[in-house]
Amino acid sequence: MKKGYRIIIYILSCLLLTSCQTGYELEHLQQLHKKYDTAVERSKFINDFDVLDSGPVKGGTLKLFTTEPDTLNPILTKNTYTADVVSFIYEGLTRLDKDQKAVPVLSDAWTVSDDGLIWDFHIREGVKWHDGEPFTAYDAEFTIQTIMIPSVNSVYRPLLLDVSSCMAVDSSNLKIALKKPNSFLPEMMNFPIIPKHKFVSMDVLTAAEKIDPVGTGPYRFDMYSPGEKIALSLNNDWWYMNQNADLTAEGMYLEAIHATILKSADDAMEAFQAGDVDVTGIPVNEFHKYKGRTDLTIKKYTSRNYEFIAFNLKEPVFTDVYARKAVSMAIDREKIIRDLLPGEAEAADLPVLPGSWISDLDGISAQSIEDDDPAANKQNEKDEEEDELSDAKTPEEVLTAGGWKANKQGYYKVIKGVRRYLSVEMLVNSNNALRVRAAQMACEQLEEAGIPAKLVQLEWDDLLKRVDTGKFNMVFMGCRIPQIPDISFMYSAGYLPDGYTANARSAYNVAGYANAQVDAYITALFAENDPEKKKAIYKGMMEQIQEDRPYIGMYFLRDSMIYSKEIKGQIAPDTWNRFNDMTQWYKPIPK
Image 1 (cartoon, one colour):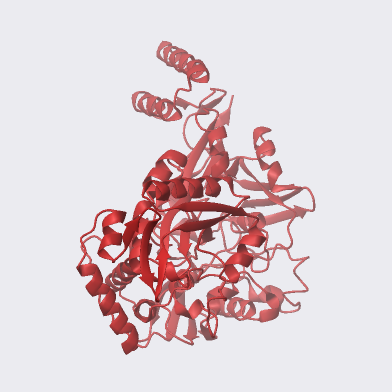
Image 2 (image 1 turned 90 degrees about the vertical axis):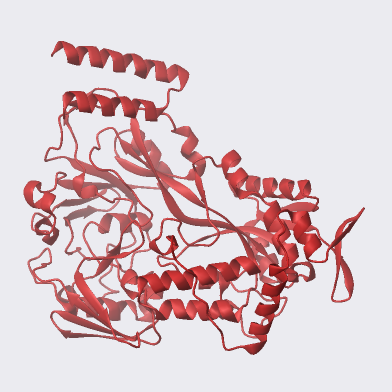
């Protein structure tokens, strides 16, 4: 070994030992490794120096895990871990990139009619199933029609609720007719496509338990041993090999994927520590246990889990927009994130990912939308006039501008002929420790602003009963956002039950919010196919919602993935693909 190398190893070893005692940050070691890479070109040693990394090398097996599969049919499985494994076998017509845009996969182009009701997807040429059969539009037609069958009960069925019919025009063209315009259809076509020819003599449902997966993706199915493992091997004929310059020249590095079948997902970390699993996720409340460790790699990404506080808009006090604005202003979510979740959450006003393409509004002017409800327009204009009278910067100024007065008992206002005092009872589910602490901090901030606040912790089922019957003041909750930037599930009157009253709540629109203008924005968003015009519509809708304040948007939680010291290459998980850039992963040669 060269003298320079021995010196560098000695220095790194000393730093590694020091880090165990002082908590020396992982980022510092990574920076040192980066400098070392520059100085010594491609030769480098990983954290504990028992594997020599001389750059990408072919060979090796990626070790994953799943719990016992319910089925290996990708459109039927409800096991998310199994879905991860079979995602290496199957592909969709499209996929989502990190910005939440649709990227061509098995379909390489699409067009839509002027009325937004007819979509044509062109099928990529030269794609073959793993058994050598050609992939055609008839496979996509079969998959979509199968998912649409209610008895199939696929997790992907909600993506196709707007589809009225689907037909393969020929082997290269698929035509989809919609019941109403949906400009996000390409983003929704990322579910796995299954081969029609494999089900000619068998029913999809009855074949679920004995299916041998055949896909078009980067890995082929080899075997499944119940209770033990699922084995995949590299598909050297993968169509994408000829589309990506790096893969055309070098190919993929990892030759196999083995997924160990665990009794429970709770066993994944033990399997990781034992070296039986190379990659697994860490929930946000567990991240602190692994922060600073140098024997593994940690990568964070924004999750789909959105936290918010809902007002009950049927409560007399919260029918007043100034009360809602004052409460919103008093709650400092940035401080909550900074003190409770540093680096583990990202502030967001609406349930749309901050990194989504539609949230990039620099230089975009909001589009004005007029709805068809004169009464709603009149009310909207009234609210706007009231807001224009106020330049309030504090909760007290907001309340004063809204006609609220103060005495020894607090802020009050006559609403519907009755003097009402502004106070808050905030519900939160007791089994979510992070959410409880965030809710406690929010209540403390309200108290500091002179707004009495009481936190009530309930079991999840009891909390839902209170919400469903409208017996709440405010509630701190969370949701998992859809794969398109659609906020209608929280902000559209269409998600309220027929004959909506104070004692009825839908499963989604918790606040009971109804604004015809916002509904018009949502309709326009789904009908518009121009990306820049979509942004203008979204911005206008966002501004209207911020004026109304039916919810207090808090933050998206961040998730983390941990990787064993053996995994090298481009590691960049994102919200929509935890195994993003996996085609560039490799395992260094052991000593």
